[in-house]
Length: 291
Ligand SMILES: N[C@@H](CCC[C@H](N)C(=O)O)C(=O)O
Image 1 (cartoon, rainbow, N blue to C red):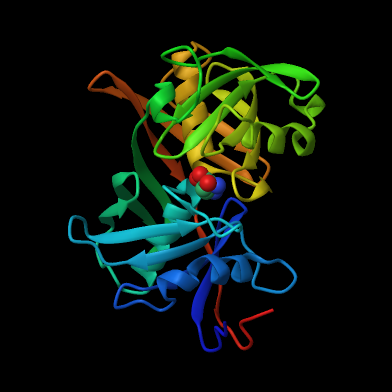
Image 2 (tube, rainbow, N blue to C red):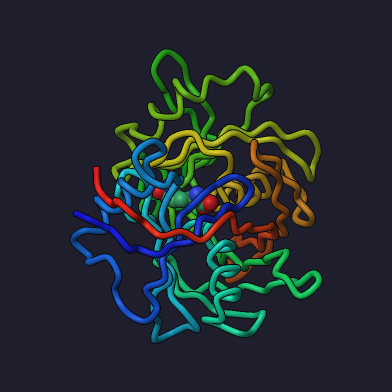
């Protein structure tokens, strides 16, 4: 496959980085080629480099549509850092002109509000929607309705895991000492654990107060990343459910920066609003798109 001439922008949300491609006016990469193209684009030696590829697509039910592919070529239901980059991209490129937008994702419609500073998009507030803890909906095979703070045997140890989905699945593990966690060892073992038939994103979290925590992430289909927006959202929600966090102004520190959350209840479910930045690094065009 040759992607010569493919136009993209390179963006990041607190170090979670992505090439983004505009397919709002038509398909640029045919569907059957997307997995391989995304593996190439994300490759840090042979491609552009990224923790995933974002696509702007048309929508019949929202202002615009959004898709996200992992570096292994699998499509994710949602990407939280990516959706802030997406909003920055569609606003800067004039695809949408309003600072408030609705975005169709594979996990429902999200609402985004952009705060401008000196006329430039600076902060993005995303209503990430509600979550589920039901094991059938994660999905997870377990003899319980919800797996909250449940013991999971992993390799030579066990962890207290809370399984939550905010559209995509996350395993949240609160620990006393984040520095002591070997994420390269346990991250992939939990991601591919037999109880998670669709795999899972893995997050180790050390709370430092009722409104602040430090976390490390192993992403499904990507490995260690500097940040995960849906993971941080799931952490805020799981922390509220377990009584670790208060609901307002939760500050989560990830290796690439921080995100702020407010957790709310809607129709008996916990949801969250996320606030954070997004940065354009450069606009590019592929010269030799294969390896
Ligand atoms: N980086 C993301 C999540 C990307 C998708 C994830 N790896 C999955 O497969 O669910 C974020 O910021 O949310």
